[in-house]
Amino acid sequence: MKKFFDWIEAKLEFLWRKAEDASENDDRSLSLLRILYGLFIALFATPSFSWIGTVPQGLFLPPFFSLGNFFDDFPSYPWLLAIDISLIIFTICLLLGVKTRYAGILFSFFYIIGCSFQFSFGKIDHGIMFPVFIFGLSFTNWGVSYAVIPDQRVSKQVQRRVLAILAVLLCFGMFTAGAEKMLSWIDLDLEKGGFLSWFYSGFFNLERKYLLAPFVLVVPPQTFEIFDYFAVVFELSPMIALLAGRRWWQLWLFIACLFHLGNTTLLNIPFSIHAPVYLSFIPVSSFLKIAQIQWSKAQIALFASTMTGVIAIHHLFHFSSSNSIESPVVYALPLVENKVELELYVGLLVWIPTTFLIGLAVTKAFNNPSPKKQNQLS
Image (cartoon, rainbow, N blue to C red; front, side, top):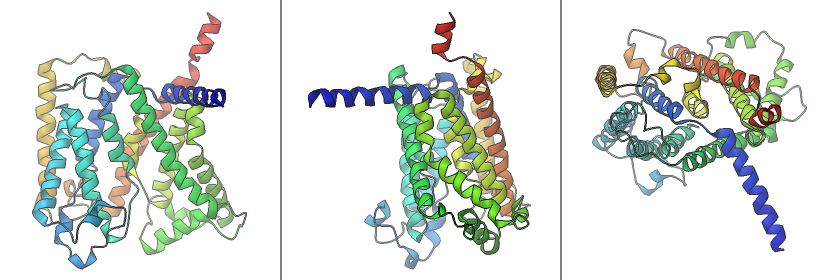
């Protein structure tokens, strides 16, 4: 029996090493990613929870497994506004590299608290990976380079372990989504469609009629049965791709970006918040020239002061406008009437370059021989 358990332990350790190898990333790429997270939050995804303090308390209906369930009603507006302001401060710290380990942990903590009350209306969104990744990446070296007050460096092994844990969590999250679809979408019935059920509901009830959505109506409905099967296979396969190696993991991330581009253009559901999550495993420093620059403290200070000013001006629009659950990018463009369509163009603005960067990484990975092949050739 002991030999059997030793064999199981050896196999699990082998699989874990493969997950670490596939998800590994370098310090400079992670530091650039930290800046990207900060810019993304500041410009497109600034959390806003203070509006919750202005709604009737009769709407308070938190889920059972929720922090909100420990409360009798919504917090007051000042408390929620304090959460909003704290999140902005932590975002600036992430962007500029000011004790980012603490800033990332506190950002995730406050973000989840705010979401607990936001989800107390009966609807739960699917953006949990975003704060989870910020929390996890806070234990890597993403706060070491390009930072005003750098973090203390962690060992390479710790960083590999953290990235592998985040990759497994992403795989698990995708698997849970795919498992539910598999039970209802794989039915071999051409008269029913999982994709079309989402499309018709959004198109006719939620005014999701932009970009390529109208073209869905002129395509034979049976054609979209392929989308159902593809979505299920895609969402059930990330763990296989992760254990298959770095190339296949990055290829799966590339397909994930195409998947979200399709959702943005056809279903008008951008899910832009997942873009930086996928980039967490991409060595962007290898094909971004800015990563090769050794920035001086003066250059970092200039960058810090400039970005702080931009963020401050941007958020003046946010707090000078009425309370709303809309993305703060809307406040920066107050003259745009169709805000739903604007969110979709923001989604394209996020997903197209993300897909391009991950596509470059995939191309480079498949063009270069693996370390094992290099050893054989030598």
